[in-house]
Length: 464
Image 1 (cartoon, rainbow, N blue to C red):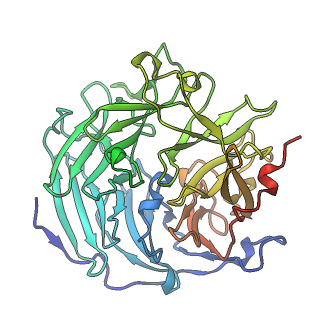
Image 2 (cartoon, rainbow, N blue to C red):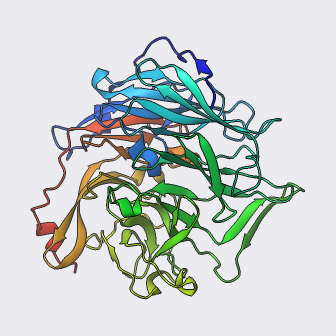
Image 3 (tube, helix red, strand yellow):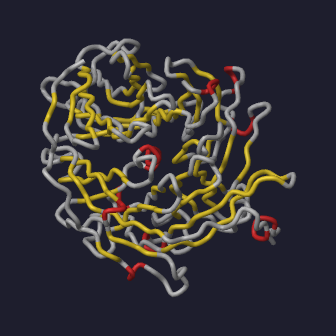
C-alpha cells in the first residue's frame, strides 16, 4: 500500500448547467424539468457505463460522477477526467482527477470516497494504479500499484485496454475490475479482485475476450450471494494480429453466442443465467436491483412476427456442466419477459433502483436494428414500474419520459444510456443534440412521476 497523497485536481466547483425546456414535448408532464449539465463543446461528456451507474451516485442522491473525455480513445491525446456533479448546487461540477487515463470509477457505499484506476498498462512500464479521492477534501491517495504478475492469472496487466467500470462488493471489502493481460500473440483479458482491507490483488480468467466482461457484484443483502459476480462469455476471440489485421474467431460449437454466468470473486463457477440460446441476442445485462435476478436487453423475434428489443429477466440456476450454455433449455430454468405487454419495446439500456421495481430505459437508435424510425433521434427515454402478484410473472408498466434527440452516431457515448439516482427523482443521460453531432454532453431530467404499482390496468391488458 502506498501513502502517496496528491492535492485536489481543481481549486473550486464551477457551473455549466442551464435549463433545457426545448427538449420537452407538447405532451410532457407539466412538472418535468430538463437541464443541460455540461456545455464544454471542446470535450465530450457522458454518463459512465450503465452497468455501474448505480455505483456512481452518493447514497443521499445528491452527487453523481460524470466522465469528460479529451481526444479519441485510441489516440495519443486521449484523456478521461472525472467530474463530480452536485445536483442540489445547481448541477455544479468539480474536477476530481487530472491523470491521463482514468478508468473504472466506483463510489464507496457511504459516498465518502471515489475509487478509480489510473491505467498505465499501455506505457513503457505497464501498471495499474488504484487511487481514491476524498469527496470532502478532494485529496487523492494512491492505494495500490499492480505492476507484477497477478496471482491467479500469472501475467502483469499490459495493453492499455482496461474495461470502463468497476464494481464494489456489498460489504465494501472487495473491488472488481476487468483489464487486459496481452501476450505476445493475442489479447487476453481477466478479472482482478482487490481486497481493500489488506490491499492485496488476485484474479482469474473466465474468458480471454473482453466484450462485456462485466464482473458485477450482486447488489442485495443476502449473505449467501455476497461474493457472486455476473460475468459474460462471448464464445469468441477477437483482436488485431501481428500484421495489424483484425480477426474474429468464434468458437465452432457456439457461433454468434453470448452466455451469462455467476462466478464467485475467487473465480469459481456457481450458476448459469438461462439466456443466450441460439438466435437470442444478449446485451447490457445487470442485476435487477437487489434481487437475485438478471435483466438483459434481448433481441427477440420469437415473441412476435416483428423484431422486438425486450427486457428479459432470469434467475441464475445451478446446473450440470453440459447444460451451462443451453439458455432457455437449461432444466428448471425460470425466465420471463418484463416488457411482454408492450408491442414494440425496442429497449436498449436500462438502470434499476435497489428494490428492482423501478426502471429507466432508452430505446434503440442504431439504423437497421428494427426501430420504428431507424435513425438515432427517434430513440427516447421511458420509465416503468414493475407490477408483481396476481398469479402472474412480474411485468413492467411503461411511461414515456422524453426524447433526448441524440444522433447515435459512431461515438458510443451518443447512445442515451440513462442513470437513475437512488431516490428515483433524477435521471442523467447523454445527448449530442444542441451541440456537434457525435460529441455528447450530459443532461438531467427531474419532476417525473413513475406509474403507480397498484394500477394494473396497463399491465393486465391483453395484447391483441
